[in-house]
Length: 140
Image (cartoon, one colour):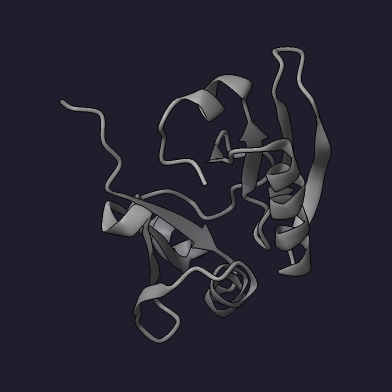
């Protein structure tokens, strides 16, 4: 199996609130919108998608109880090209209605990072690493 992620679906408490956060707040273009039951955003020029569905629908689809809480064992990474951009992305997420979970700070390994959460508590790590600035990448 080749490593590839074609889509990520988040179970959210309020699809419209999450849609507003990602679309209006962060500026992500909507790919599909099915009346509060499914919203998707095209990522990286269409190579993958981020989907939003009601929390209980996603849990039921997987055959699981919808009572999950606390850390869910997952974070999303958003790599950027400079330390200043880390701060800018965190500020943008906060203006959009997100919460700063961990303010940006220097990392022991030489990089710079911070965390925000979306309105449903999903963690996003925004980071910069010195080595990534010297190599071509898909980072912002």
